[in-house]
Length: 230
Image (cartoon, rainbow, N blue to C red; front, side, top):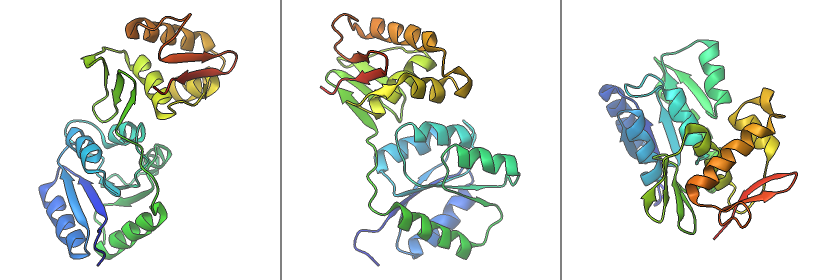
């Protein structure tokens, strides 16, 4: 086996499943991390920087679909959903939400391991996004959905956080109004630019950002917004 084994994070609330996967994956030379719920899994994903995540959907603290959405806010690590939910709707929702593959329980371990190998090969040496992004004194911790300014936490609404997080994921680059509206409000709101202006206005107020001479959020007239790289 390679001297630098791939790290696989298993997020599942069933201890027996985690143990079975840990034994099976370790026997193949992989390093295994574990999370017994969604919050623990997201924290492990940020701290352990796994090469692949195996995600159950039926978690005790949050639905696995939500875990997937939050993970995709800052990471493109391959995700293999492993769930008893076998309906086409659940599979489509997970795959549209960013999952790379979907295996239903009960499952055959050889097929599971083959799918793991395929996803790891496809990922290759792809660069993972950082779990924390900073613009000078402004910092966003995607794993914990926490924003701090000069080390003091800033309370944001869900929409305010979503806009700032999207700008942070494209630090230093322009994100168009249409892209922000489509991803955050939905495809039926791509013309509702006033929604975005209001949220950006509130963000600037909370960050002490003067619209006339912004320190963090820059307006690209007629195009969109950019989070300054400081």
